[in-house]
Every structure is written in C-alpha cells, then in structure tokens.
Image: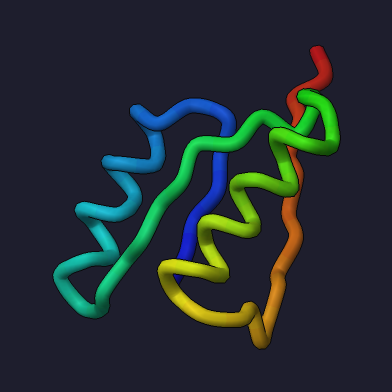
Length: 64
C-alpha cells in the first residue's frame, strides 16, 4: 500500500495502523505545487517500488 498526503504527520499514523497487516509506504506530496515537483515524487515512487497498477484518488475537504 502506498499513501500520499500533504503532511507527513497523518501519513505516519495511518502507516502505523495499516502496517500491522501489510507493508505501507508513504510519501508527502502537496498537489498544489508545480508539475515538476509532483512528477519528481511519482518518478521516485516508480523507481523505488515499480510501476503503479491501481490508483485510487481521494481528496476530502470540509466546508463549514
């Protein structure tokens, strides 16, 4: 399992919870940054873990 999120604090907690059952990798990524930074993170992921076969995209917001 691979997790991407803007802040690493929440990623570490999620990886710790899931890691008991499976290997979890996490990377901090701010999608509001420029394309070259986003591309660099995905290049790193592909180099370290291989190609992405399934992508589940989920972005949540809270409106008050």
